[in-house]
Image (cartoon, rainbow, N blue to C red; front, side):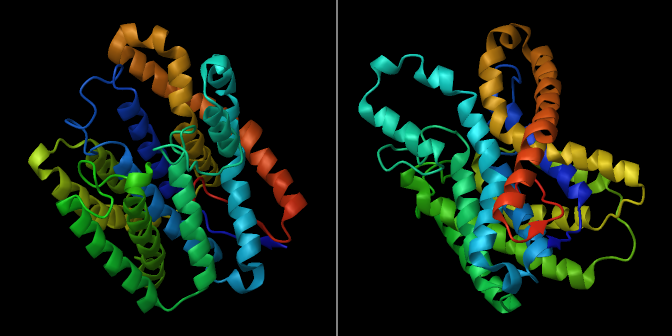
Length: 355
């Protein structure tokens, strides 16, 4: 049986914009001036909160009414099929470099690598995932997904309670550098020392997204909002310059107020043209590969790109986008379809990247 899903193509494009913003921060040598001092993000972490919130929104749309039929175990398999193939691909393309100097590494290095290959965190390192720089976000995504499925279609007041409590914890933690918020601004979750911060962040953003979907479903505007507005708003929020003393306040306001407003606006635009919808869906499909693959691809091209600075940066954005579109269409989508046919009793008609 196939589960039908409404496709929010503008939200897909917004996700790709956020993924490209992450690229600019991780490749600072070819994007001079982008980073903690110039970007709206203390680091790429603020885009992560956007991804979490967007995931909660689109998953509520796709599955909230269907948990009685698909169950927690099938939902876990569905989400694993969505996230794992591309994650494994990102590890495998780096495997040669990881093993190049294997004789110089301690045994724990190979234990950590083995754990990474099967998508498990490492208890033997400060980082939750020593391999796969962004895998920690996928772990928190899976945890939130399972809680969401276990709650089924829970009353709105339960979601609101989770959102309010986690928002208060995030505010207290970020402003006092407690509860795992040990870095600048609203960040953390990639190390065991900041694990609690990651839990709080995903608890707020994911369930705020699920709650926002219910609000949108009841009060969505009958008129279409110009998609340029949320797309431009997202770009401004990601790159606006913020003074260091206002960093934490700006982060909190962006996560709690700006991201939900932009997602609500982006979801309120309906694409009438099938050709345009398909084009936007392809652009959106590149977001997850961009997010997972950009750092590995950049390190392979670094010697060519760094000497030409910002021009190298522009070239790299085009290159990583084209690679990601190809990987999505040629590898990720086909293998997920095959795995779904083989292991799922019910299959989604559409699955959004990261969502």
